[in-house]
Length: 77
Image 1 (tube, helix red, strand yellow):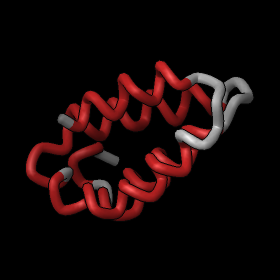
Image 2 (cartoon, rainbow, N blue to C red):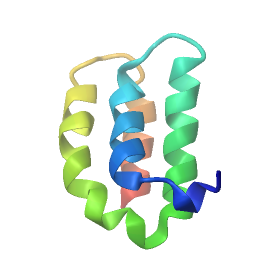
Image 3 (cartoon, one colour):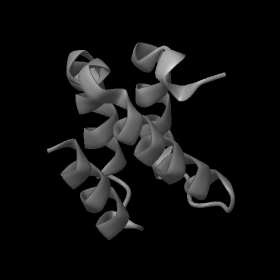
Image 4 (tube, rainbow, N blue to C red):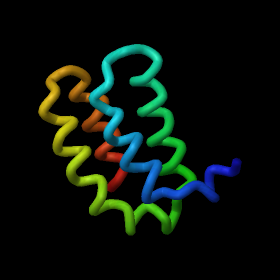
């Protein structure tokens, strides 16, 4: 399936929820999935941003890999 045809309201929050994963390969899947969706999302990303607030906030309660989460949050800007 082409990435542009995915339901961003479903998959983007799902990948942001997975940022708390510390086990390989799940952590890599979360980061790669977020980057791919953000790179190809275009106008589909902005309507999903309100749904990303809680997953981003909850991911910062876990102390490991904070730099990785900050870089991903930076990609949203």
